[in-house]
Structure formats: structure tokens, C-alpha cells
Amino acid sequence: MLKLFIVDDSKLIVDRLINLLSDVEGLRIIGHANSASVAKDYIRRSAPDFVILDIHLRDGSGIELLKDVKMNLPGTTVMMLTNFPEEDYRKKCFELGAEYFLDKSIEFEKVILICRQMAKQKELKKQKT
Image (cartoon, rainbow, N blue to C red; front, top):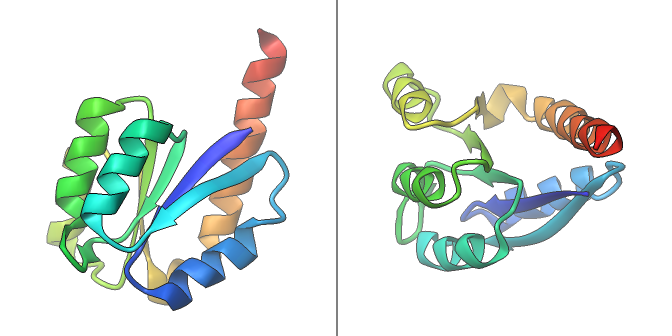
């Protein structure tokens, strides 16, 4: 099972992601947070396989949280999902280790495809071992 954690300060976005992803086979949403501090603690304790992360959070920066995730859980895949798709942000996030960077306004549906692909890859890897 691919363990997913969602970090976004918009309840609407979190609810939409949960609704869209709850039926993805092989994926389990293990939690969500709307602040960097809550997310940091939960991510460190739960060690998700995959984190969907917004750049701007109520009490901090998703970019700082990305740094923390990659430093403490380097095997965790991170998708930045943001309304701020500026090239400077994109470049910085990829430099810090984000595997994906999507614009919420035009690429939201790609989240489902990527999650399905990742869950399938995890299952195939499990079958090989």
C-alpha cells in the first residue's frame, strides 16, 4: 500500500484530493494537515511514501517543509501542488528534491494519474521481492 499524506491550508483542496484519491487502488491516505508544524511532526512519525504539499501554508513555507522531508525521509516522494507555479518556485522545489511540481489551476487531474502510477509501481516492486 502506498501511504499518502496531504499538506494544504485549503480545506476545499484537501477534501477534493481525498475525494479524488480515496478510490485509487493500492493507495491509502494516512492523514492531512493544514499547517507546516503539524505536518512536520506527523510526517516524521508516520513516514509516508508520498506527500502532496502546497507552497504557502498558514504557519510557514511548504518549501521549508520540503527541505525537512527530504533531509529526514529522503525516500519519500514529494509533489508540490500549488497556485504559485512561477518558474523560480518550480526550480527551487526541484533543486530541493521534489519529484513533481503541478499547478492546481490547470494540472489538478494529473494528481490522480500520478498516484495511480506510483501505487502500481509500489505493488510491482513488492511482487518482485
